[in-house]
Image (cartoon, rainbow, N blue to C red; front, side):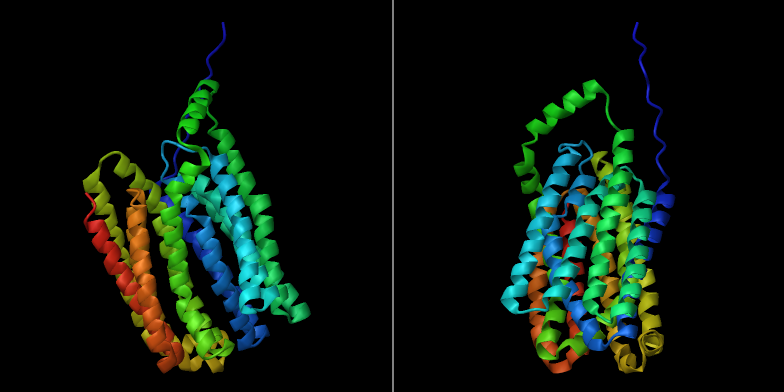
Amino acid sequence: MTAIRHRAPVTRPSFAGNVGWAVFGNAAYALSQWLVLVIVARLGTPSMVGEYALGLAVGAPVVLLANLSLRTVLVTDPHSEHPFRRYLRVRLAAMAVALATIGVVVVLFDLPPAVVLLVGAAKAFDGAGDIYLGLLQRHHDQRSVALAQLANGGLTIAFTAALLVGTSSVAWAAACSAGASLIVWLMVCAPLAGRLHHHHHPDPVERTLRRHTHRAAGGVAALLWTALPLGVASGVTSLTANVPRYALQHESGAADLGAFAAAGYLVLTGTVLCSAVAQTLLPRLTELHAADAAARFRALVRQSLIGVGDVGAIAVWAAWLFGSTVLTTVYGPEYAGHGPTLTVLTLATALGAACFMLDAALSAVRRFAGQLAVNAGVLAVAVAAALVLVPRYGVAGAAWATAVAAAVHCGLKWEVLRRVR
């Protein structure tokens, strides 16, 4: 008689522990990205910082749009309507399209080809690894996600510093960032997710049932149809964030863009920390919504908004008091005059943090189309604000355009969530 084997129950990490790992991983990754900019600023020139920032401004929106927010769709797919390999195939194909698109943009607008293409490649490799992190996130394994982020950040810093010292070339810095992302994708993200996927592999009967379910789900076309509104919305959000940078590059050149980017990177840690909390909330909110626990769902959203509001107010106050000193200490005396810019960008970051929590709630209830409509409206506001403020006020105008767009974004997302029943 064949013995029936029972798998040992999998112990889920605590919510607080997952938040801690998510904050640690995202903080480490944000710190590494900021340190790369500091390295370029210290070993290079403001124009080199501007070139690197231009590469990010071009590559990030294209790659984020191509991402189609598949990671969010994967995490909010509790019944596994689509197999992981389908998510992976779509993501890899999308990254190839993104790289080709960046190449076309470089040719059409006569941009620095090496820097822009290599920064775009780094973002594309990160995108390939990101879908594996989505599988880990769905299983509440933020520890493994954090380890992958730490590896990415550490390799990026080490490679960039070594090659920039040896070559004094920002193109080599971008190449090192791309190399680090490629190594982490293939040697960290994929193995970690593969181990988890194997651990949770269903028995033969369950595999057969899932195959039929996956066929009935409609294949790649159905997955694309589900993901497209949220993917476009995320791409539009990235484009919105970069509109002031495009305006500064056009009006003032690379030096002012470098100053704006330097100030922006100081508040990037806050953005990434709030993103970490939102990522941890997302699977929990998805489960609460699936269980019809509306009161607990609303309470968790409310608590998260109060938390980011309190921290944001303290951060704005600190930036107002110490902004110029911090800029001088970190980047050098030529950045000292941009203290007010840092304060305004901190305010924009606080508003953006609230948007992260609202986005998590809307994604948990799968209101993807509503997010796209809101983000399109915010993009229009950002363009109008940049056209009015940047020519008149330069770097400070770019900061205020960012804050105006963030305020409108937060208000509209709150209204959409308020209407959810």
